Length: 254
Image 1: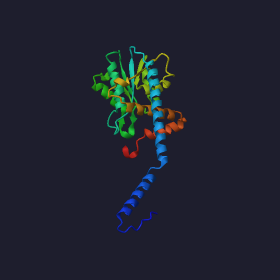
Image 2: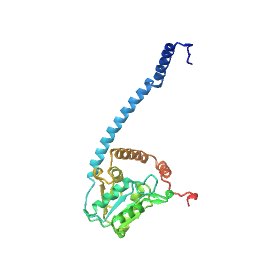
Image 3: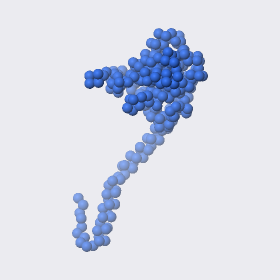
Image 4: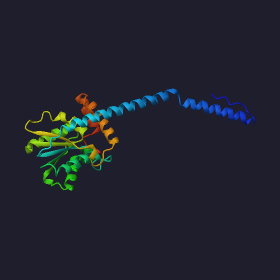
């Protein structure tokens, strides 16, 4: 409770009273523990940026050794993202597609296989949009395949492998980001030994659309969250993914 003095007409006493109250309130609004919390937040941010830099440099260096550019029976392009309103392909997916197109003249690529992006609740299939994009850019539709039944990385490769074995393709390139491919390599281990798989990351410094530092920071933390998700028991993983990317259309949307 603030005690207001009876100052009458004494202007000086009112001035000193208000100045003292303002100083007291300012102290109450900026307690020492907030300053301490800000310092800890700053320390955490510096550590996070340092870890992000070290991890990204390691991944980019490791994934360079994955690339073995040879004549390819097909390249598999993994779905990345949509626009925020699910009206089209997002920038991450476009980077992968544009990189695949840039390799068209340098490599002997016979076929393109777009996989992933099943979003029935949004009435959209990423792989179909990817195929349309490649055809619009001049690739013959006869040589572009789309499999949009999967909605996560594990499903992407399982579905792609079915068509690869069906078509008897023996040399395969897989195009995605360096961070994604480093995680993806775990899924090709059980692949038929007759099938040779080259992991080909698009270059961050020459990507189209351009990759910013903010894009890299977000991608790094997305991968960290994904690793944490994969470490969970499979039923928990399936439940979370089904919530994030539901595959059943509700009755009102049918």
